[in-house]
Length: 295
Image 1 (cartoon, rainbow, N blue to C red):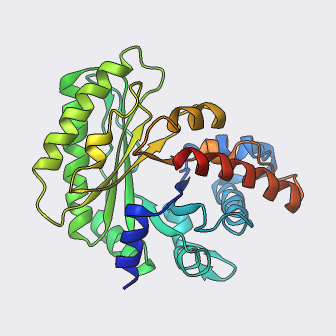
Image 2 (image 1 turned 180 degrees about the vertical axis):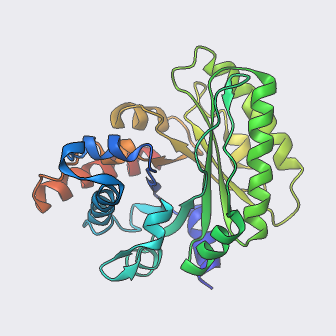
């Protein structure tokens, strides 16, 4: 029953998806922005404890509920951890009304043909089974496109959909994320190629093989509207890609059929040193901006 309810919330709910999935490589930077520098913890375990404490504080904040946040993407360690003595995904759905997702990619290959494919994902079937057991609704998997190279973009999209079909077979909904670098000199051209490749892959999916798309906010307003209307697409969400919260929200507001799935823009201005009132006010302000841009 909850899967159907979650599916409905993802397809038509008002709000956005919070990306709380910084991994080993991006955690030190995320912590640094949060006011936790490398000299304040000793080793990876302590680092992950710090980021889990930050995520827990976000999840338990006053405004972090399904009134404005309809989904949240988790790092695997977060999924396997607890908040207030309850498995994270379970707390998100049962206590906050927020649909839980899991980041499953293991980072990127070196750049070739203007793109970075995903690295192999060892133990994928076991991870997907565990995710299902924890009450995870879907997954997220990221590649990066740096330039308008047709061969490279075709390979990225093919790899994404191949993995997406494995996720669907495991009973989960994949968020397919072929990010285009916002600083690419050929961003607009890459977006046109990407749109065509995604459309071709969507047309080849069988009924019931439903996916979500997470895409860089395009240069042309409404560029991805036709993808959002495809019968195999649950929702199209936007990544902030390094834009500031203000710029990301301004650009997103011009995309009628995209909602946000922001990470850095969500946590902008948050600090461990803030009082709970200060923290909740700062996070609440970010949530309001991103929510309004997603309407």
